[in-house]
Length: 299
Image 1 (cartoon, rainbow, N blue to C red):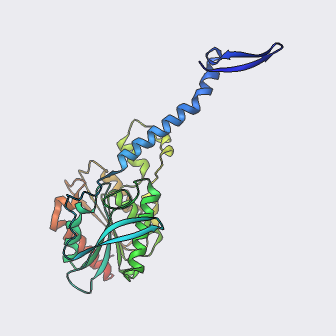
Image 2 (cartoon, one colour):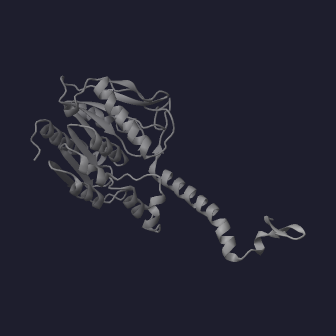
Image 3 (spheres, helix red, strand yellow):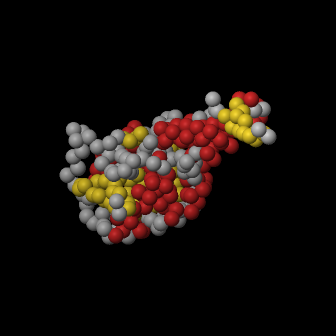
């Protein structure tokens, strides 16, 4: 039983906490309850945000014939893994940094990279820390953005890519990475597929029972609608009307916040995985936008 002490003329006297007034007991336990609540909320947040698949030696980890394994230094002690795929036509029209969604790893989107190389682009596919063969553990928004920026810097310093020929492409959670980097670094174009406008609005969608005023307790902000207003390159937003993961309204909000030149492609009946559903037809629309962006024809 918990005790504290009161001092009397005869010396300290033990008093049970449970004999304290109810308000005093509540005040005593509130910090502990609040700590447990915040810890639990952030565990739920992490579970909803990250679904990585780690490297499996028995899986499909063969680099495509036109590609190579690359390791990118994020810190002196941390590296992330990627595939650099060379365009089938050289010189490439531009180089594309592809940031995948919250599940799986780069092997799930390797086919997209290969398709884009056949359309004249060099492509760097990356796994965030904790995904695939990348070192470290999945953590938070700051780590994702750091991985994205390190990959951007790798293309400039190790591959000699010029910023105006560097394209950022983000899918779902990866859209937060692409938008963050594009808002702080010069680039040639930005593609946002099935993107979210903010962590708070995603929380409202995924956890509608949680009062909005409690969203500030979450670890991540993902304020993409605010950040995209700082992007100074052509922007393409694509979203499906039947996206059950991230409502199409968030894609529309991103488009409204973006600067010109920009394009919006709403896929009627499309779900969250637009490239997987649309295949070559969908990717041809992406390539058409990118070719226009590189030629200065997006208005």
